[in-house]
Image 1 (cartoon, helix red, strand yellow):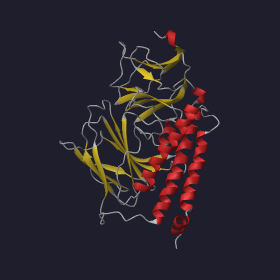
Image 2: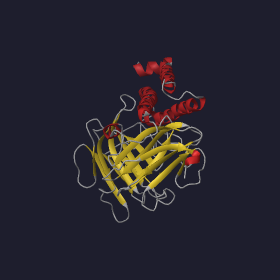
Image 3: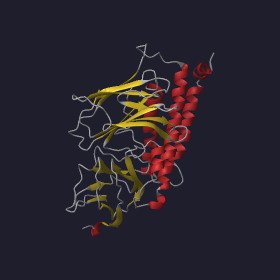
Amino acid sequence: MSDAEQKVLDGSAWDEFCDALKEAGKVVRSEKAPGDAFSQAEGYRYLTRLLRGGLESYLEFSDPMFPVLRCGAHETIKLGADNPDNRYESASIRPEFDYRISGNRNTVDYLGISSIVNKYGSGGTMEVTGHIDHRELDIANDGSFEIIISRTEKPGNWLPMGEHSNSITVRQTFQDRINEVAADLKIERIGAADDRPRPLSPEKLVRGLQGAGMWVQGAATMFENWAESFLPTMNDLPAADQDYCQSIGGDPNIFYFHSAWELADDEVMVITAPEIPECQTWNFQLNNWWMESLDYRHHRIHFNKHTAHYEDDGSVRVVISHDNPGVPNWIETAGHNIGTMCWRWIGAEKHPLLDVKVIKRNELA
């Protein structure tokens, strides 16, 4: 009898999984995390969201022999300052195989695809080992294209893998999400002789539960630590450590600004971008402490190049306030008094700094 079979039969596989989740709960109670009941409730909900994503990734869609592009971050699974303008997709791969992504470009503003080494659950990194975006793709007149993913270079659209690549990440970034049409994509292993995955095995169950548990604890710990690192720049928005952003899976075409914010009930924050550089797009978003984007289904918590109001001189002013101040570019706090925030220049050669100030609500002009 194998070790995995024994773990399934004696229940220890499940017990260890539950113990890992219990350990992850300690992240929510970190010393510097907000200790109020509202923030703590969001923290525990955050863990359940990570768990849903982890089970899908490590158990349901973990087979690199039969990869599937799945949306792992969306309206109710959020992490790492997830961009409300994005559709995120990922798939499991192994570097000894070659893969093909095919589909139609359609009209989404930005399409970027990366091969990565995902270690969120075991080291807190997500190294990009290859990247290609729509500007480099050879696309047919009808919008169709295909990309070969492999260790060795191939003719045409080619996405390289590294020695330890284990996942594909797709970012589709919208400026006008209502009218733009998302790219329609699928992934397949080249030369697959079998047409169906094998049934569940004890080994796959044990690996899946272990991976999901490590994912919840690893991702939660990493992003809570990152939120704590913003405390020295509270209510400012300086340029982030771009090397670190890239090491945890940032898009190579994005320049990031990250920090924390905190507003009293009678305060507002005004963020001014005096200069908007030539760029694919830009956006700003408000997050909670756990680096989840706030509820963009029901609240206005972000703006981008397309949706923002511009001043006569071409600058942009974003106002963060608990209630509607009656000015353009109002960002809602959606019941929060503290959290994190992110500004992105996407596809820009210049990365102008931002001006941030906190004033009393009655001082806002």
